[in-house]
Length: 341
Image (cartoon, rainbow, N blue to C red; front, side, top):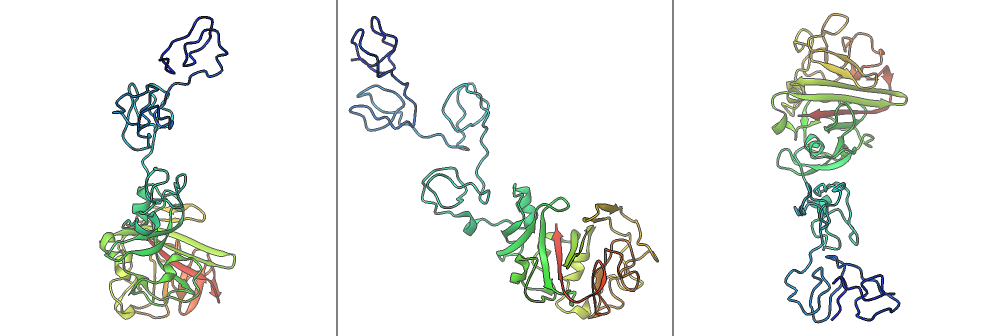
């Protein structure tokens, strides 16, 4: 019997058309069988990638899937097809929960590249990493809300993946400045930069993975004013969340500032200062006048902080009860703190 693809070209014809008639119209030019094309031949129960009738069908085709590990003859990569020696220009990248890939016929990102499976492992419900930096290291590049679990409790948290190297976890967000330098439990404020309520204190959930030093970042927005300051490899987050009692926490009080001065960056102007580059005015940063002051909590990029130039563009927080975000005397705005282990 003539078989498509058997190479038999009859007298006077220009193609293999699966019959043995000479000089017919050759209108049914054969197409080689391909695994996964859905062609099941007479007497068979599967698509086996050939056009033989009644063979054993022992090699039932399985569709190639990115990341299935199948590397064809002569190739150097898994490229999601079963062609040997093609260009391998579409090297597969394994599916990752949360990468946003939604396959044909599905309604969710379920962490695989299989079409029309049951989508029972929806990533938004099950994918958790310890922090925003862990998500960033896993390939996440978009700012947004991610599930993190640094301390045994899975929470939704806002991640900044684009500023100053990315991987920043939001640990404080308040409508008006934070009055308390103290640890507090998780709150829904930590999923937004524009919360409706004032939220005192700093989420302590990152402590298990920041000990002893971490990067810490202070941001605020008030009208046209904005401040965004990063401080590197310093123990401030551990200090600020060491107690639930504000009066038990001392933060850069007069005469007891951190030395050497930390390396830091103004993320709005891109200006940097290296480790041990002291603050202007008198060389120190003053974050509060006395330990546990309930009306002081401030940082600055280049000036003293408390009781100095209050409107040099980089003042953040509260000084003697007065709100600062780039300038002093504000009545409204949003203040945040971020951490990166």
